Each structure stands twice: as structure tokens, then as C-alpha cells.
Length: 155
Image (tube, rainbow, N blue to C red; front, side):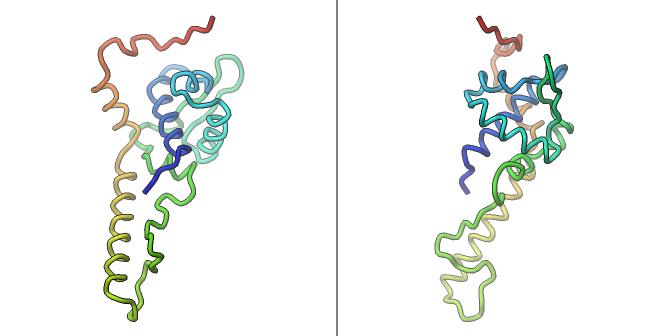
């Protein structure tokens, strides 16, 4: 399964919010600078994330986005579903039906079974990894002092 740039950007944006909005909302401009994602892309993505109830927004000076749920309750599958087309697209390159008919050749049946199981495994992984897991991994693998302060200075 190939996750599109839109999906990767959404996960990066959500992880950035999880890491940086513990006490105050995170402006999209700050996420854009830290993540190297254009502001217009983030605006589109966060609009979808807000409509699906994954983030909430605060308008005005000091505004931005924060998670609408505990990071333990937001899976990567939730994030991808909010911004992507179907979460597990048809992975079958041969165009076999997902439910094989009795008349299909044995190799078609095996390919269908393989792609079906692979799709199920991908879904299980995406539904089992949470933002909390990513935050914990980030904090474990980030050198001390790397994010000691979370201020952005524009001159």
C-alpha cells in the first residue's frame, strides 16, 4: 500500500500538534516551518481533520490547533481515513475479484487470497499504532535538549 504525500503530511502534522500543543494551540504556520509542508496543504488537511473530530481549532491571536482526543485514542488509520480516499485501496494488480468465483483459475484464487490477507494486515497495523505510540517513540529517539524549547523566532 502506498500512502500518499497527503497522508504522510497529515500524520506529520498530527504528530507535530501532539508534541507541541500540550498547553496552547499550535498555529499551522509553526507546523509549516517545522515540518516543511506548505501552509496551503496544511490548511486543507486540518480542515478535513477538524471535520472528522480529530482536532479542534482556536481562532484569533494565539490560535491554532490542538488534539480533540487523547493521543492514545487517535490511530494512524483514523488520520489517514480523514484525508485519504479508501484506507486500503485495491492492492490487486491483476484485477482479480476479492471474492473468487468457482470458475477462476487456481493462481487467480491464490493472488486474491494473498492480496486480501495483505490488505487486512495493513489495516490492522494502521489501526493499532496511535499518536501516543509515535510521541513515545519520538521522545525515546530524540537527543536530550533537541526540543527543549518550542519557540519559533521570526526576524
